[in-house]
Length: 161
Image 1 (tube, rainbow, N blue to C red):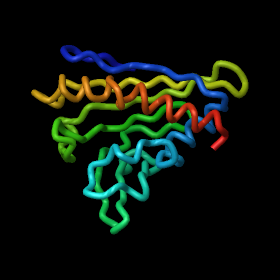
Image 2: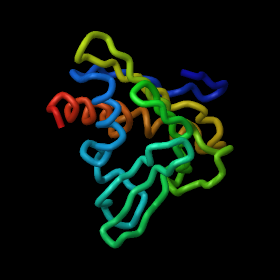
Image 3: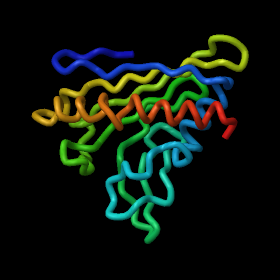
């Protein structure tokens, strides 16, 4: 997990009762099953949230009207060990196409024992968001941010979904 100068990364872990492969699949293929639907950038609640399964792939939501809203880009796809996503949402929660202005969400899936995986999240390079860095860090690290979201994810994995 990389560190940055300036705005510190948001880091946290959850442990789930699943293999790294299953934990990775729920995070990626099953993203929509655990992500809070109220957390979206489109005008309507999405009917699908997609992480395309390859480096250079898109991370986006699709609304009921078929409109797609990008969230970011898949920078590294290494199942079941690592996923690296560019967070291309600015301080107004609008898509920023310039990767040089994107923070990064890195996930590592580490087997602690058979059927038990530690999921490590680091949301770093927040300084790339410029003046919005502190506000984005506060949002993703606080109530409704990564701590709440990762707990939803862990409950979904542990429920066997």
